[in-house]
Amino acid sequence: MPELPEVETYARYFAAHALDQKIVRVEVRDERILGEIRKVAFVKRLKGRSFTSVRRHGKHLFVATSAKETWLHLHFGMSGDLAYYRHVEQEPRFARIVFGFAGGAQLAFEDMRLFGLAELVASPDAFIVDRKLGPDPLDPKFTLARFTALLEKRRGTIKSLLMSQEIIAGLGNLWVDETLYLSSIHPRRPVDRLKKEEIRTIFTSMRKLLRDVIARRERGAAMPARSLYENREIDARCPRCGGSIRRAVVFGRTTYFCATHQR
DNA sequence: TTCCATGTTCCGCA
DNA sequence: TTGCGGAACATGGA
Image (tube, rainbow, N blue to C red; front, side):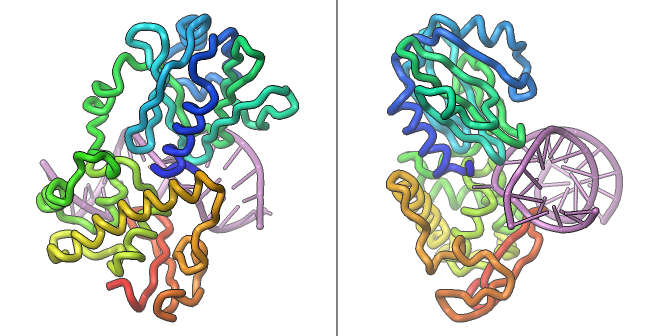
């Protein structure tokens, strides 16, 4: 379930379990999960090393290794996840890569649909520049002024811009819908017709939401019953205003919104 | 069987 | 140049 808050949770999970242990085994179960790098090279460069720290930018996870200029880059696609375990029976069904550690534990990168990616990169910063990724919305340096500037030069709908990783890195379909729901803004609203005040509301709601979802993921709590997330159904009652929840395709994605309070 | 799915990329068109 | 719709990728789950 990987948008920014989920990837943040994976990053913390990785850091809590899989750092500073010698990698004694690297099994690539399905090569389609790898990018350009060949399986042999991937295994060779990681075996005997260890993971040393994690870093996240948007939906991308980077893990530093004890090898110079060698970072594991993971993208979780639509169905990626991590699992750390000690016994083979606990291996996830769709484990695509399994790292075995000296202590006997293992870390699996699972991804049923294979839209994810695992590769090695020399530098996360260079990767972010190459891929033209926008700022991470939870970066302390990401400000309302920066957000406003990013939107100012653009046209198009607010949903399409929040979804575009070159503008802001990390939001996906679910949390864009939730952000706009909380902001009372219609997903199709042209961004050049947003008032300053509305941009501020989106900025604030988005960051508050992302932090809240991360906190909930951490303690295994569900989303509030009043959230759009729990009411993504055609003709559901909007828990905030009693209006009706509608479904439409916006920017190519199934979009839920309240036809009454989102304008 | 059919439709839908938390992502990304590429192509064609306006 | 920018933005958008559609298709493709792979594999379930309802």
